[in-house]
Length: 130
Image (cartoon, rainbow, N blue to C red; front, side, top):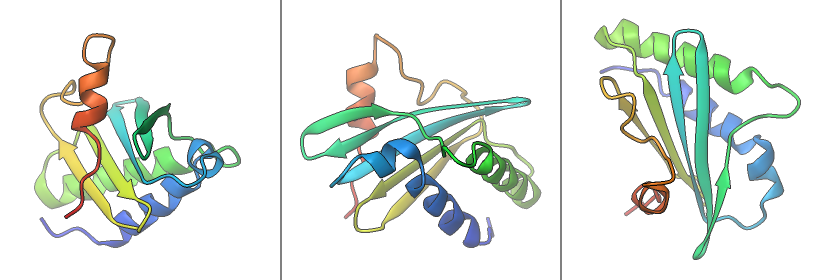
């Protein structure tokens, strides 16, 4: 799949502008899962500071639609490249600036978090960059 790397850079810049990320000092890593469907988008995630894990959502206070609009634009670019729209987008970053993005095209519950799997998911989604 040939996708312009500008999308990755722009998504990273927008995530770093999110209120919870800006307010959290000295974070080591973060993860956000975006659930994307027609007419709706939601997200949840975690910010990791050593062994501490802070639940978080991604939103930019002064430009509430910027991240959603960029994800929709990215989804359309992926669709043009491969003919499929992702239903979930996983963004993992560390404080050194490394970023990993993954997609789910078929299972809209792959990275869903709820009371039964909350603890397992926060560890499963913890970014590990080698």
